Image 1 (cartoon, one colour):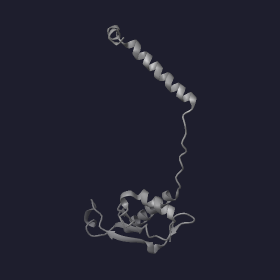
Image 2 (tube, one colour):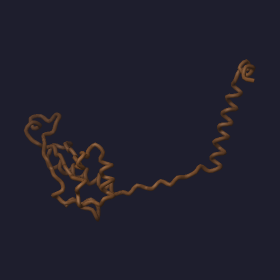
Image 3 (cartoon, helix red, strand yellow):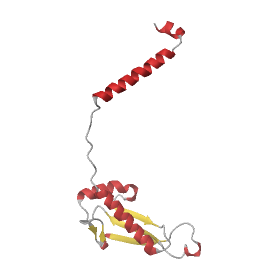
Length: 143
């Protein structure tokens, strides 16, 4: 059982781990031992998470989600399988917890009359400044 929140937990059979060889430097060990972990979690068909959390998770995961709705997380930060496995689980928990937070509804507001007045006064002051900078020859052509 992977505990996400007090009410949401994922069954172990819903999460699949594949161990692959990590890329990059590592000496003799890198080409022999499959220490990197690829976690797969079928978000779309999971029965452990509520529908609203599922929709937000699909949106939050972005490029990590396949067209079939499978979340794929690669963990290769550490040199051991177990630490990479735990890192992948922690990232899945963190992502799912973010998805459980309901977004605040935005309430449309209007600018206050005082802020409108300040804005117009500043525009007027700026126009006056520009008007005083004009040369007298350009004023002859304008008027």
